[in-house]
Structure formats: C-alpha cells, structure tokens
Length: 270
Ligand SMILES: [Zn+2]
Image (cartoon, rainbow, N blue to C red; front, side, top):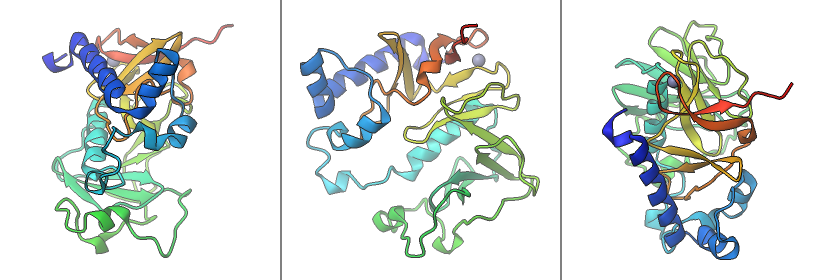
C-alpha cells in the first residue's frame, strides 16, 4: 500500500470529506441539526434532494456547474478500476464502454475510450450530446463524426466493458461489470464494480476474487450495522454515507491477500 493510501490516510480523507459536507452542503447540515448524525442516503433520496447535495453557493454558478460530469473524471475512475481488476488496457487499445447514451470518444492514458450503446438504450433522432453542447472545443474530444453506435467492436486491441462475462462474437475480450445488487459470485477473469448512479467504485482482481473498493475514491464503513459508502472526490453532488441497492448483502473488511479495503458478501444463514 503506498503512503498516499495507508489506512490512516484513508480514514483522514473520510473525516475531511464528512467535515466539508457538514460545513458546505445543505442536505448534511439539515440532517446533522435534525438527527445529530448523517444517516444512510438512498438513491431515491439522493435524486429527490440533488440540489441540496451541491455545496452552498456553488450550484447556482453556471460556469462552475456545466451539467454532466466531465468525461475526463469518468475515464480516470474507469481506468483506475481496470487497473485494480488486473485489466489495464495496453497503449493504443480501444476501450468500449457499454452505455445507455452516447459520448464523444476520449483519448487518455494512451487509450481511446469509446461507448457502444447497450441494447436497452433508447435512441432519439433529435438527440444532441450535452457534453458537446457545453464543451464544443474540449481538446479531449475527437471528431464528432466518429460517433459510436450499436456496432460490436472487434479485434485484439479492443476491450469491451459490459454487463456480461462473454467475449463479443467478433472476438473482443470483455470485462464484466457488476453492481452490489447484481453481484453473483465468482469472476475468475476480474470484474469492475459499477453502480449506475455512483460510477466505477472498485473491482474484483482475479488474484483474490474479493470485491476491492478504490480507496482513493471510496470509503466504506458500518453505520448502525449498515454498510454505507462515502465518495471522497465527489463534490457536485457531495455523496456521504450513501447506501446503494444490495449494500445489505456486504460488509466492509480487509482483503486477506492484499490487506486493502474490500466489501465481502455476508454468508446467508442456513
Ligand atoms: Zn485482494
């Protein structure tokens, strides 16, 4: 474990995130004064109170609130999760992320990051890419005419992030993506941990098969017997003590092989 992610540093980062939330975010100030604590935050509550999860004074500044999360942050999170899963993409590779909406290709880490539309995606002929609307000259964005579609990627240089563990018909290797609610056990080739409303939070390395969280970005703890997550780098919205669906099945522990924070599935009682 590097000095930057020692357990003590990890706990300090968590404490700092909580203090900042109490100081600057209306939702947490309200909860603290009403309950004297920060109770678990569910997805429904986070969506209904999204405006109250933004830091005070910041949400109303359009220049500082461009709407969708910058693609660069999303890619950094995905790249770190792939490294954690032991599936770091090679330079020159193309990574296709299965998604419900389009995004311009992004070049970062020597890799081109694309999306391929999931079969569940609803296509709108009048769709306009919000990232493009807000950042028409963003240097990370490649040619707009190069839009992805439902085509299945092929070739050895492609890597597909998908909700399945089956390689594409065209032979491109797949990295499966799981959520706590959808996790169903062994992933011998590694897997990414992704919650649709929280992003890529960690991964299952094939070397241990445990569900590692990315300690640079996520902190997990028990709160009155309930597993809650705090996103250490998210400010807009600020997400402290969130409770994703399926969290009741997992408890925070330390990986017996790597000594790093994991979530372990609770054994069901016989
Ligand atoms: Zn491990």
